[in-house]
Length: 442
Image (cartoon, rainbow, N blue to C red; front, side, top):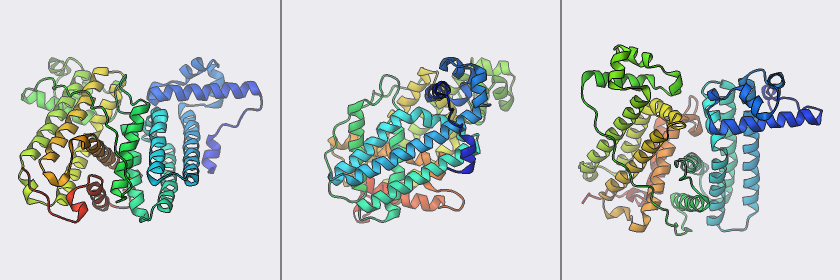
């Protein structure tokens, strides 16, 4: 433990009663942060729910930042200890390569479900507190070193190759394990199926012949049609553009309609004439995203690029476009994610948009031809693979330190080159099997 962390930690009380009070405070804070964002949680309500006086809580944690810092130190230690325990257990295992890979991935998915709320809370805290951000980066590096060392001992593969694949699965698996709407979360059988699909993805990307049949996964609910088109009035367009600038990752509660109107250069009453409130503006921006992304996919479906370019170039172009899109829109989408916690309709529309995009992407990929060898029964596997690759790309934009795309680390171009090679193999695309040119569309 570093000196700064030693100062952060609260000394364990000597009296049993005091130890129990501290434990209740910490357990209550974890429960609140698992369901809400740090700005929405107050120390006084934690004290009330924990059954301690506010003065008793403030004596231990004079500020919310102090409590968050203490909780994050414990959280990082708990996660790292569990990774060490899992690696030790897997190394002692006499199971097959497929089973060892499956058990490791399943454990990651299960812990992502259990700890997902706290991880999201600390990601928000890290954006405002350097110490939490630096500690989180340190945990990510330590975990990756442990897993990479285990992977290279298990497989006769270069360390860099194992590390790249681990980053993709860690980032993508976590997001996929907890993205379903309320009432539709992955149950035990769903986690098992997803772990099996990711296991096959990993072994295929590594060129390992030992693979298992992927269980079928139920298709998500059919995508709903979006709610109408927007008019092309100049004022309407200015409001949407202002929304893109103002919804920059902040909570909806921290953004006023007056601020949006000022950026749009119109009076607040004119803003309300177009959008009754800022929530409806956020819904409209999500609809615009849907229209833009779907239109881009449809244009790709009609393009002759499939016949003229190599598969490697096409994959790199698609990944680059997606990164640029995410860099441009990630602020608004972060605000949408925050608003979804209290707006079920917004959550459902965002979820259905992602499902619709996945189906359209699969339809476009089928145009490439038989070189992909996607059988009807493989569509679920292929869809999951695309989801993981997309989630990994978003992670590269939102948390570049996970991939070491930082000053002093690798550059974005190098990451793109490595990621494209990984994607070609994960998707079992033609060039991954011998650098053959792209198959013409039919």
